[in-house]
Each structure stands twice: as C-alpha cells, then as structure tokens.
Length: 271
Image (cartoon, rainbow, N blue to C red; front, side, top):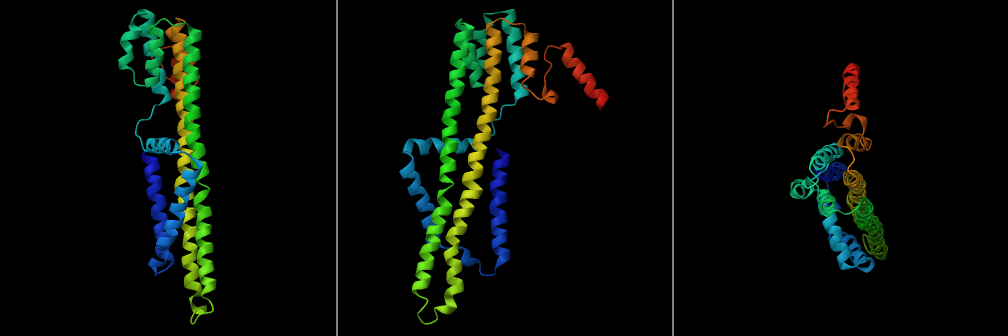
C-alpha cells in the first residue's frame, strides 16, 4: 500500500531531520550496543513468546501491508450483480464464471452454487471461512501489539546498563565532565526502543487490523450475494440489497434500477 510506504519514509525522515537539527554531533545518536540490546532483546522476547510458525505468518501478513491489491466494495457489488444476472438467465453458467471472477472468495461461493449446495450449507461454509480467516489475522494483530511492548522496555534496559557504567566511572579522573555525553549515549537505547515501537510495530498492527475489517466486510458482501443467488433472487433485488452495505455515494446501478436513478438525479440537483 502506497500510504504505508509513504508513512514509513516520512517517519524515518522526520526522525533523521530532528536528530540532525538538534545537535552537530550526529554520531552520538549512533550506538551499536543500544541497537543490539533493543533489536536483539525484542527478537529474543518474540522467540520466547511465539513459535516460529506464528512469526513466519506474521511476516507474510506484514508483507501484505505493502500489497497494491485492494478490493473496493462498489466494484465487488457491481461484479456480484453481473454474476447474479447471468446465473438467473442461465443457472448452469455458475461453473463457467468461476475462473473469471476477481476475488478468490467469489470462486468459493460459485463452486458451492455450481455443485447445487443449498443456501444453508453455503452460508455455513462461507461464514465459517470468514470467521476463521478473521481470527487468524487478528492473531497477527495481537502479536504486533505484544511485540510493541518490548522495544521500549529493552530501551530502558539499555539505558539502565549505560547509567550503571556511567555511575561506576564517575569517581575516575574526568568522570564528572563525561556525565553529560555518557548520559546521552545511555539514552539512545530508549530512543531506539520508542522509535521502533511507535513508528513500526504499533502502526503496522493497526494497519493489519484495518485491513481485516475491510476484508471481512468485502467477504460478507460476497457471502450475502452468493446466498441470494443460490435462492434464485432477482438480480435487481440483489443489487438493492448489496448496495445497502455501501455508502450512498458509492452505490452502483448495474441494471438501471429506478431507485439508483433517483439517487443520481438527486445528486445532480444537489450539485
């Protein structure tokens, strides 16, 4: 997704610019031990908390954040109405439409219709599929929210380690004069932890959660449409019902219904 990529670039840019503008000693923001403690500690905590399969699936889910494939409700409703119109005219057409639809969930529904399953069975199968998919992806959100707690915590660990070393050397020659610089280095671990949590884990988790909500809504529209098609409902009725899932400005008029026409006319008058 373009917005996610842009957001990460913007967050990185703001952080770098803030660091460059706040001091001429840029090197003080770079500390390999702080990086090791925050990243290594977070990774270790993740391995303790979750198994390899869960973390691997999480990486796949994160990769989908940057996917360009987005399904819009209006396009799905339009396609469902077109499918309904074709199947109503020729019930045997369902099987031939499977490979031509845009959404994989539509293929599942059309296979069930083509195999003459009743509406109750279709509803049970599709609703179970929606629920299980939603729960699987919500687990990824829970993992991201759990991981978001670790970087700041390990950042504090790094800071405490730095403070212990600072206080240990405070009595040595020149120790008082090095308190400020050493304290700054110690706090870099906390800085890294806060950046990692608030610029990556938390936003990514919320992005995945929002994708789940949109995906669930799209699949529900498809399921409702497939149920109506299996019951041999009129395509016009299916169009009006599925349009109820959409914002009034996004509703479609594939079959030229009077209600949709009135909405368009009203929109022109309002304009």
